[in-house]
Image (cartoon, rainbow, N blue to C red; front, side):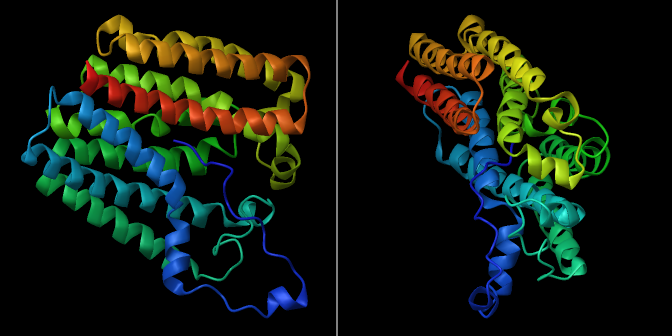
Amino acid sequence: MSAADTSPPAAPTTPAAASLPQPSRLRQYYALTKPRVVQLIVFCALIGMVLAVPGVPTLADLQLWATACAGIWLVAGAAAAFNCLVEKGIDAKMKRTAWRPTAKNELPDWQALALSAVLCAAGSSILYLWVNPLTMWLTFATFVGYAVVYTVILKPLTPQNIVIGGASGAMPPVLGWASVTGSVGPEAGILFLIIFLWTPPHFWALALYRVEDYRKSGLPMLPVTHGNEFTRLQILLYTFVLFAACLMPFIYGMSSWLYLVVAIVLSIGFCAYAVALWRNYSDALSRKTFRFSLIHLSALFAALLIDHYVF
């Protein structure tokens, strides 16, 4: 899933700011887990759980959902903390992330690593013991995919990092589905595909108006390596393909007309932003496109949830 551009701005470097007390250690640990990002991850996982249970859930279903969400939340937070540790040098060069405790060297590396290890172990144990082994292994594989394959290998080496690494971010609904059914069905695959195709235009819209940050950091993001115009074209093409993928829950029979109407409206909106961005670029429009992408995914999955119980 994705890192939203909702982080606090970098702290000012004035003497008055320097004299301010540091946040408590607990707050620093919490910040490393990227709570807003993890909330979206858990929400998408919960949608997978809900859709896997026909009709009104029982008390046992609710208990299972709560347990699975807790385990997934912990492992996702562990991956985020590990990401902050590995990328602390890069984060320090970017306004969007310079505020993080690791980037500011307010938190020792060993503590960030220990936090990641403890959260991952706790979350994995919960999933293995009280959910099912398949969900635990899928969640752990997602941790490795994001924290190691994407963060350590793909992100600094290829401008296609977001495309390839997007597989890890698209896993939450699969984890949710597996936690309830003990298997991975085609319905989970459809949800995976939607997030997988949503991820590149979402992140590239952010990268367009943060291009100087990425250039300073040395990361080979698409706007840095291939330019603004090429990136805008890729965003446009991906939103068109995403539009088709968003229709699949209705086509496959997972949802009714309610979801279809919402999906069409949201997808038209995303495509409209992409077309406008492709035709006449501005940082302000790129920022609006990025923010709408967050609304698009959240509202799309909320529509799936509502549709599941209304029809």
